[in-house]
Image (tube, rainbow over all chains, first blue to last red; front, top):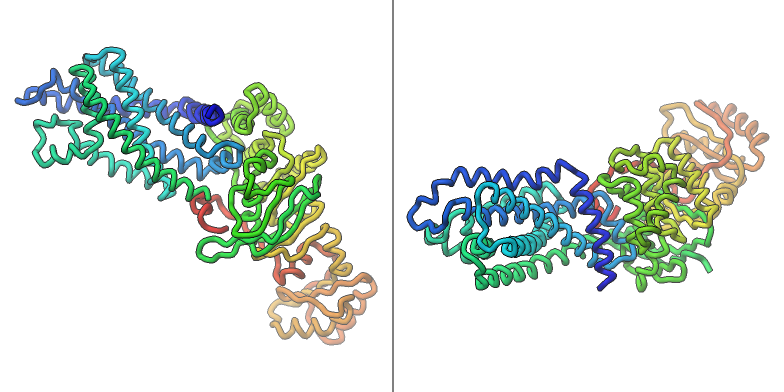
Amino acid sequence: MMRTFRESVVLWGRLMRKIVRVKLLLFFALFQPLLFLLLFSQVFNRLDQLPGFAYDSYLQFLVPSIIALTALNSAFQSGIGMVTDIEDGLLDKFLIAPIRRSSILFGKVMADATRMAMQALVIVGVSLLMGARFETGVLGVGMMIVLAACFGIAWAGLSNVIALRTGNGELTMMIGILITFPVLFLSTSFMPSALLPSWLDTVATFNPITYIVEAVRALVNTGWDWDAIGKAFGVTAGLAVVTFTAATAAFRKVIS
Amino acid sequence: MPLIEVSELVKIYPGDVQAVNDITFSVEEGEIFGFLGPNGAGKTTTIRILVTLLAPTSGRAVVDGIDVMTNPEEVRKRVGYAAQFIGVDDDLTANENLVLQARLHGLSKTEAGKRSNDLLEILQLTDAAHRRAGTFSGGMRRRLDLGQALAHDPRVLFLDEPTTGLDPQNRRALWTYLRELNERGVTIFLTTQYLEEADALTRRLAIIDQGVIAVEGTPQALKDDLGGDAITVTLAAGMDGSEVDRVAGLIGQYSDAGTARTYDGAVRVFTRDAASRLADVVRALDSAGVHVARLEVSEPTLDDVFLRHTGAKMRVEEVKQRSRMMSARKPR
């Protein structure tokens, strides 16, 4: 256990160093969510005047969605990074080291989670500047970040499955975009449940994003909704089991 | 006891592609042992089995007394591996790449830093220690990659075509490093498709072609086995196969083996007494009215050895870096 942790930390350190080292990548990783935050909050600004819109402002409503969207995008970087490491021969370097195979995975997951947490934190900071209020305070923000990172990791499992199966970074990126947008729009991310067409509202209840967004939304706007938080973690755990089982199988196939 | 012992090793990839077909060999401690063969001969497959990255279909491979199949982790502690395609992280500095590799092999932060400094010095990369590897030249990247393979001071170093893609100057420099390493006690197993590299570097080599070891020995012994110096008669352009055969018949008797070898419009005899035999060959050709383009006496080369044991000229082709996802699934 200690050993896996030590090995994972070494590999985590490498990935973190890369994030910080490639300044432009860091910039865009943080800038992209802010761009979405600014664009969506301006374009849909007047939605708060619709009857049935129960939030103080569209920004209050939107912040959780941007956190989720960012986690989804960030997750796809994970798979692309995996393909790059394989193509650059770096995975081989890790495989011939006397370390546990699982450490390679854990190190990666830890780095993904760190990146996602950083992104979520920046979104929270900027939305504060834009006038958003966080009902549950610092602890609530902490919970949001943990939720976003956990969900991001579960989703990163999916991106790794696609990346390992296709063996192609570009293709992974394209499939990622293709999946991300419908998944986001077929949820309560951009429109409250009450205002969605009824068929879409039904679809949204089967969409894992809805649960994450709703839990974070409660933390931002109303308070500690343990029922929503519980569901969000439950959905995340279920998703993670599925994606990581598939990712591990795909990983084994590539390294055997 | 040999440091590396391979017996009846077979690797068949999905789709019934037989990459390694029952090979047996061993490498003694302190040797530089080489696999010489063209692309697709089974060199990379063998090396990847030995460094535990690939499971054989059958057979046994033992490194330092440890079976690669049953105890891969112990094998990994003892071997260093530099793949044909360089594996360095371009975003990290030379020092960071080396420290990472040392840390993965269990060295503490301090030890790893010290080890990295030593390696940078040995590989003459000290000045570039804190530059990103992405800015390095081909030769520097090779050296850094070699340094990574040495990070944990392994007993055996496995090098898959270590000089492919290097210019002659860098190639020679790398040979010097490898010899120095060997003198420090590191056993080296390398693969190459360069005859002169096998000749210059290895103490013993095996010629491998189509998954089979054709012959094995010291470079000198293999050349001596051919039977002395070579007299090569190259016929004028445009001569057909029957003319080549006719010439082979004419001069075959002057070979110590009693027959001549033919290839690519040339006929060759090996003899321990080339100086006097040359006159006989010239007379025979002259009286038969053969149009000769060139006549040459040379010491036998590994090229000749390769030709004799595989029936073909050694063909060198450099493969471009391609997706490892593909190479991980398909044989090379």
